[in-house]
Image 1 (cartoon, rainbow over the protein chains, first blue to last red):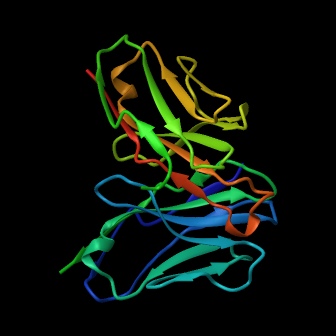
Image 2: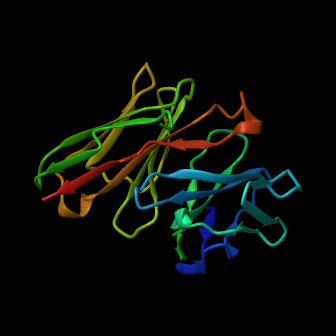
Image 3: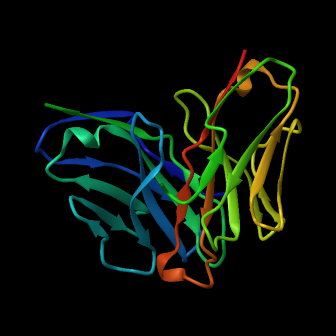
Length: 115
Length: 117
């Protein structure tokens, strides 16, 4: 079974600084997708960024980028120029490719951006 | 608006009762997933439907059941409710993998907050 581990339950960062959230996963599959979701106090689940395992290039979405290390099974999220609105719980998630499979989530990292 | 609609947004009910949560997936999405998020917990996968058929089951209690209808909306039925069933219940849908692999992903509804008193 696939597992997703987020080793940092909580993190904090000053506004405008950069922070990196860690995620590791375990799978024997070669075709899969990785995601980061943000859950602000409103509790809405918002997709931040996605990475397909076959793609070598790290995904980026504006201030958000990932460091995808396939051999190490690591998928970290870097948030640059942190903003107060980035305060949220961040979940790393994994799914197999090949068909429509469930998402498996890590336990989350609570990020607080301080003014 | 994510395109996934969940109703109701809030539900307060007594122990022992039965409730039904409803989810309408994004237009064109065939797959629906149900997740439970208890207080300070991550998201636990309950069950998945794909085009009307049950596809996968997670840690779903026997008191809970679900179905997906021909119009692709889904309902999650929770019965004999206990205090511990109080949680946020999310529905998500995904585009068909083989139709749109390059944009494959999951869209979540805003959730139903269930409080059992």
